[in-house]
Length: 294
Image (cartoon, rainbow, N blue to C red; front, side, top):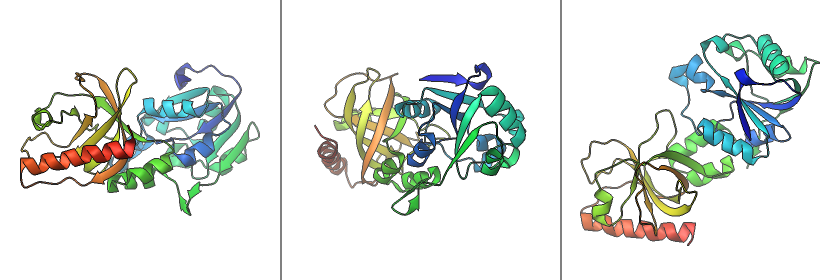
C-alpha cells in the first residue's frame, strides 16, 4: 500500500474514508470498507488543539498503515496536522482537501466525525455538497455497546486485553527497541527483552500477560510479558515492559521487537522470596504456553 503525505498528493478520482482511525477498530473498518483511499492525520489532532486532553494512542502511524493495508486499501494519505491546518474552516477542508487535493468521488465518514476549525464541520456539510457522494456510517455496536477508541483504551487500562483485541479486530501491539537492563531475568533463569513504554501511547495495566513477540526477521515466538515496576527489586527504572521469549536463545539488543498482548494472567505482585517469585514465573510460562500454543 502507498502511504502519501498530503503535500505530495497527485489528484485523481478517489473513494475516500476520512478519520483519525486510532486503532483501526471494528467501527473504523465499517467506515473504511469499499474505500480505495484512507485520509488520516498525524499527529492526533487533539495533541495540537487540546494537548492536555489528547488521548493516549493505540497505534503508531506505521501500525495504522499496516492495519489499513490489511483491509485491502490501495493508499493512505496523511495530513501533517499542525496549528495552521487546525485553523482551516470546514468549507476550506472540503474545497482544498477533499475536492482539490483528493478528487473525491465519494467520501465515507463515521456519524460522529468532525472536521475544520474546532471540528465544526459535520456530516450535514458533506451531504449538502453535490461535488461528491457522501456515505455516513452509524456508530458500530457489538453486544449492544458502541465500539470506540476510548472504550478500547479503558479496557487496556483495566488489563482486559482479550476484549480490547476483540473490539480492535486484531491483537494490541506494542513495539520498541530492546534495551539493556539489569539482567535480573537472566539471573532468575528467565532472560527478558526490556522495552521502555513510549510517551503518549497506551500500555496495558500492570501485570503479567500471555502473548507473542515478533523478531526483526519476522519470526514469532510465544512470550510471557510483564508490565510494571518489578516490586521485588529497587531498580529506579520506572515502568518497563519485559518479554520472556519461550524456546529462544539469542541476542535481541537493538532489535525492534513487536509484542502482542493476548490474555492477562495476573496482576503484578511482590513475593515473599526470590524462590517464590521463580515458582510463579515458571507457572506463568506454562500458562502462557498453554494459552498461546506450541
